[in-house]
Length: 154
Image (cartoon, rainbow, N blue to C red; front, side):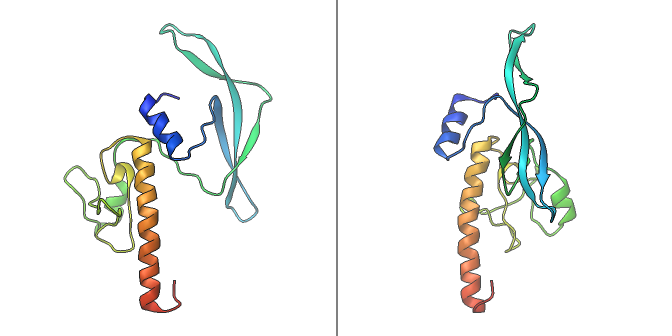
């Protein structure tokens, strides 16, 4: 897991469970098409390559499942231009990132919240996780206020 020590420390502080030498293979769904698990393989470190790095090598027959109900694919460190192009009403900065309230992640569209690479340039998964936690709290408060105004509607 290429990561700075600070990132690992922050991830653990956020409650992340690290599964070292684990290779995700595929997502598994239920009969309704909802994700239910990730199929993974255990790995071991192979021989050092020319740079001296030992790369993970899958262990044959080591397949196992990790129960999940949500999968977030996070593989970038720059904003994907598709979202702002597909939602032209979203306010963006010159660099293509969404303009958000830094305390809540709320965009100029009241029901839309964002964080991570699409909203800031912090560039670490831990920063994105922090954005997600702040946004989740803000979304909860937003929906509670909306519900209070609209009676029993959620």
